[in-house]
Structure formats: structure tokens, C-alpha cells
Image 1: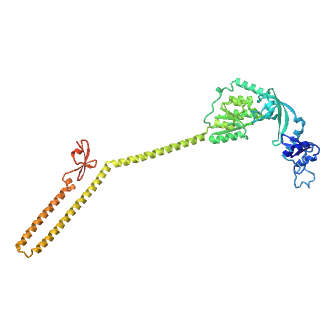
Image 2: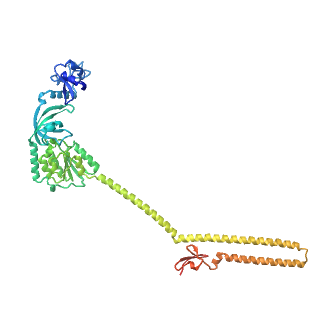
Image 3: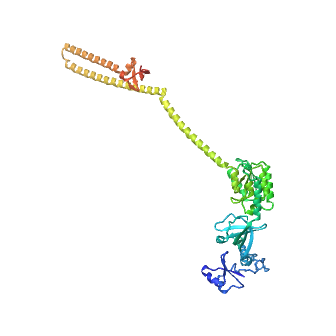
Length: 513
């Protein structure tokens, strides 16, 4: 019977001295014997309230007790958990001497190089497959050749059952290369045969259409490959029609269904056909190394893209197909153009053109408005309007000045007249008692004075009228200007100068000869 022990690291030496052993691969201590020594009982761990079952006990007995009354509350109390079953298998494998040192030979498969520090691969024969692992410290002294797929090797090691994953694998302690594997030799021979017939020649490969409307897909309807292809296609170009031909991608019927699928879709006149699956081991991908599939692909009229496995896996269909993609997603990307990105790019370009045109039109509109404003400002109508307004203003100012002058002289005359009348009254009052002849003399003098001032007033009025610009203009005179400045002398202009002559009823534009 095997007892599993929970021994702290600090007490391992004591447990070892009492007969406990260390199970290295599963990382725990155990004791094998009919009964557990007293010294080891303190590290014994009970499971589910009962003793751990050991090798030789009724570990495989199932079913409930006949005492139904005791099991009413738990009908499945005697059923074991998955962990318990896998633990029992692990303990059987570990304690069986035949599994501790085993010799086995087979063909290397499922190996793409070191995974980190260690070597993970499998060996196979015609009917079965055995996973293997060789730790780096073992490879340092045991592996004296380059390990590759297809080699026939002889291995020594111990069998281990990985209970968490529920699988067995061989822990390799020694390895020898005993030649090329039969399956690999057959594949190499077939590949050389097809290559010699020209099936791999680049010149026979058909170009993949850049803008397909219908794309055929040969894969399993339940696999990840069709999901990946549909996802990429919908993202890049949802307008492309996808035609699925469901096939078995592995198993005894896989080759036949794949060949039928290629022929069926090829007869439909599609633009492109994708043949593939979502990766797998070498054995799972071996279907696509079949000669019938390779020849059917080479005979197809429709361009074919292979999408079998991943970057490190190559099958015969990859060499024969018109284009090879590492994954189904990559095949969809190679086959279906990214029209959605092109549409977005065109939309951005159209928006940019529209924005640029709007900006240009706005600038041109502002320029036109400025030119129109300048043209209106310099137009003859506007010039005439400005000159008319200025003439009106000057006329009003001139009339106002004349009225002011007239009123000033009139007020002065009135003042003088009133002063004269006042003086006359005083003189008259002073000479009222004088003889008549004196009065006559005074009256005569007053008449002379009045006549003199009246004449003076007339002269002033004539002088004032002579100074009036309007009177001069009415009399045939003109007011000459150049650049809106008065021409005061003939020497201030020269031949070719444009001048303006303002009359009382309008302007005359002239050029100096």
C-alpha cells in the first residue's frame, strides 16, 4: 500500500531516515508498505476523511452500498474524483518496475526544435504515438546528433503519467540515431517524384486574382479554420461570397472528401479556392501529404491557396498549390483584398479634397469680394458720386461763408446807420434853435454823408460779389485741379498731366497739351 506524506522541507532528512521516498516528477513524499510506521504518521495526510488507497487495494471497484438507508443523503459517496483516479494511475506507473526502465524505438515526429531549454517530441510507428521529453541536462551528454523529424531513434527512459493533464510521456535518459524512418523516406521519395514531374515548378503556378467575387473554402465546417477565414473576410471585404465545402480534415475518409471538394469547387468557376485546416500535429497534417490530393490540386483550373498547419509545417499540398499561407487567417488575407481599408482611404481622400476645395473657394470668394470692393471704389460712378458729394459740400460751405460775410457787412452797415442817425439827432437837437440856413447846411451835409456811406456800401457789396467763387464760375471761369489739388500756376503742370476743370454745373476732365 502507498501512503502519501506531507513532509516539510526542513524535516526531509528525518522522513528519509524513517523510510520515506521522494517522488521527483510529482514533487511529493510517499511510503510503500503494509502499514505506516509510527514516526511517519504525523506527516500522513488523509483524503476525504478516509485513508489513501494504495496499490493492490480495490481501487477500481465502483458502485454503492446495498444499505440504501446510509446512502440516501449521498448516493455517489463511493464515486472517485478525476484527481483520485489519475493519482492512482500515476502511482501505479511510478511503482511498476517495468515502467521505470524501458527501451523503445520509433520515428521522430511533432518536433520543431527545442522548446525553451528542453526537447519535446514524439515517436511513432504505424499504429501508435508516444509523447517524449528530454531535459536539457540529459541532452547535454546523451544527444550527440542533430535531432530532426523523420529519424528512426532508439530511446531509453522511464514512463511518467502526468495526472493534471491525464497523459503519459517518456522521460528520455538515452537516445541513439538508428537511421531514417520509413514514413519519412516514403514522403521524401514521393516529394522527389512529384518535383521531377514539374508539379512544384513556379512557372505552372496560376496568379491569385486581386479582386475576387467568389472564394471557395475546403475545410471542416466545425473547425477553427472556417471561423478564422470568415472573420478576416468580413473585416476586409464583406461583399465577397464564400462557398464552403465541408470535408474531414483527418481520419480515414479525409483524403477522399478533400479530393472530391477540390473537384467540386473547381467545376463551379470560382475565383480562388482555399484548402486548409487549423494546424495540428505531424500525424494530423499527414493527410495533406497524400499523392491524390497533390495531383488534384495540380490539375485544378481555379487558383488554389493552401493553408495547412503553421509556419513550421510544410506538406506536399503547400508545394503544389499556387500559393502557400501559414494559417487560414493568412490565406484569407492573401486571397481577399482589404477593400474596407481602401474605402476608408478613399473617404479620407474625398474629405481632404472637399476640405481643400472649400478652403480654396473661400479664399477665392474673399479675393473676389476684395476686388469687387476695389472696383466699385474706383468705378466712374463711384468717382462721380464722390466728386458730386464733394462739390455739394463745397457749395454749401461757400454759400454759408457768403451768407456769413453778407450778414457781417449788413450788421456793420446797420450799426453805422444807427450811429449816423444818432449823431444826426444829436446835431439836429443842438442846432434846432439855429437859423434855418444852418439847418439846411446840416441837412445838406447829412445827405452827403449818407450818400458817401451808401456808395461805400454799394462798393463793398460789389467787392463781396466779385470775391464769390460761384459768381466767377457762373461767369465762365473754371476751378482747375490736379490730383484734387488746385493748379495755381501754369508751371505746376506739364504735358500729359491729367487735370480736372470744375464748372458751376459739372466737371471737365482734360489732359495738358
